[in-house]
Length: 299
Ligand code: PSU
Ligand code: MN
Image (cartoon, rainbow, N blue to C red):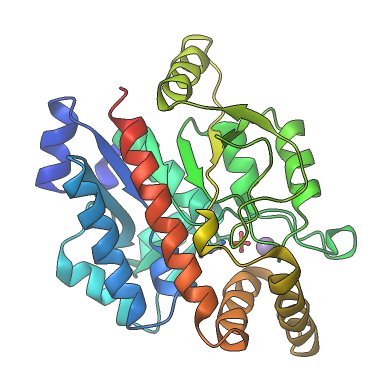
């Protein structure tokens, strides 16, 4: 498997010298945000990490390689290109074998980060159990990945396009530790909190310690950290919920399902909120990258 890895020089050096590194996913660039904001965000996130003294490793599939750490040209290709595949675990080998460009979801980024030896990964929101999953069975492969790949994922929880309580139930079933960072409630992406209680953790060191203990026990699971968006940037739940219902209705009327559903809903919500949800989305990812950097420094 390692033969497919192509680790950038900076990331390799940092890993060899035990310097802090964080992984960043590429699906939020290619499928999660529109151009040209996406390229700006991709670069800004890398800058936040660098300014914190941490080496950022944005991950994608390209030319039959799992690329760990991208240069500006590669980021640009991901942001602009129209035929970037969205890669979750099941798509990994197909996209590698075809040598096409693939953007990695949370699940695929966890796999790649773990192969490269990166312990901490920052994203926006994780995939989860979709509303109406009792009929559609639409449950993101991200959740199963948490059960089997030991990476700490910093997220702002999950969007209310999902069924948050079912998402947490599945994670519990899979034995995945889920923590609220300095909060007692699972964050709801655009909104700082949902009404669902989770275990609280107050320091970066505690998260690192739990990860180390998990590894010493031989547990394979990842750790999901819910990091709430700062209150001043949040969109209140009641407000965003109306927009989400409109987006869900449009998805139903256009028969959007499967891997296309999450990107469709994200894009519709940006349209409905005239870009304000995008602004919020950017703020929360930045906030997650900053926390990921502090946790990476605990190792
Ligand atoms: N949630 C977001 N923004 C995103 C995604 C999720 O708020 O961009 C992306 C992530 O890459 C996540 C993927 O891993 O969507 C989940 O897709 P699906 O629901 O098809 O598993
Ligand atoms: Mn799905």
